[in-house]
Length: 374
Ligand code: PMP
Image 1 (tube, rainbow, N blue to C red):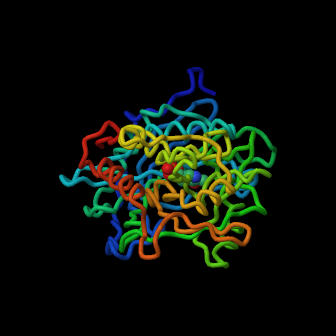
Image 2: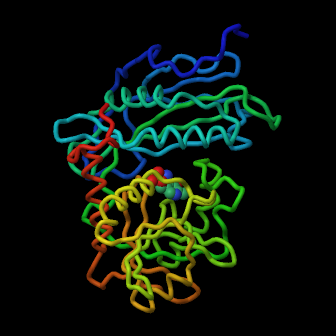
Image 3: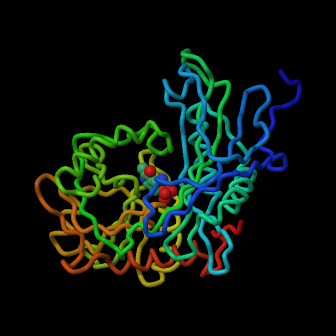
């Protein structure tokens, strides 16, 4: 064991081993989300005596782990999802990487994995993204999806805090979520399964939260809905949609005032970076137009009533993959709740504006403190 303090991540000790067999680039139009990967990966090992060891960028390669490694048995795994964008001058930009690092540390801490300096990992991810810049098509809508991942690597079947861990980052070039423009999706409200609960870990990005959601998602798809909408409790509070936060635009029954609503961060909602950004932009840009921006609980019944009375203006999901995803209908207890779109429309006006604000900042067309130049 070392006698010094465990080390934090040290970007200065990075070593880079470049690949001798650079991969072929896919045609941008052939990109499938998360299917192809870039040439390299960033890895940083940790153990409880030494702390974080020297970061390495190496050719993308398999991991070799003993079958007893704790990640395989007790799900010591958490991850992040973020993107690197190419601006009009060919420079690489991240979007609010500090928010992803904050969430990554919270997720890691919750499952007894080590935490790290956010600025140190951002610096390394920025270097990695720049090295992989040839994988990012220059066109609007394209980006490099980055997947920071942390796993417990201790070899033991004993249930306890891992004494060693591996942090790695891989990258996958992705195209526009809706290559031919927006397509409004239809949701099925799920009442027979629960994604998250008070005191649980639904607000953390743990791999263990995702596998149990696939069967309800597949059920919804088998009935012709693209995603499921997660409700919570006897009150049937609306929480999230698939892997996105959920927003609705409503008109008040008494006053007619317009309100943009999303569920509050009460521990059952993932703390989406997109959600946070949409709220901040809406407070800055919609509030002056008379909108109220609310983080509050709301029920499926409230949505159904608003829809029946013509007060549900629009609804959309918000997340890194699609930015915003317009919603046409929600199927709930055999009724179809219409979310404000006319038959020929694929998106509401607010959804469209939010998408343009976000992309403007992500692609560096609008100078903004959220855009991190690599
Ligand atoms: N909810 C869940 C369950 C998610 O997996 C994601 C994707 N990370 C989101 C919401 C959206 O979060 P973000 O805006 O940070 O991508």
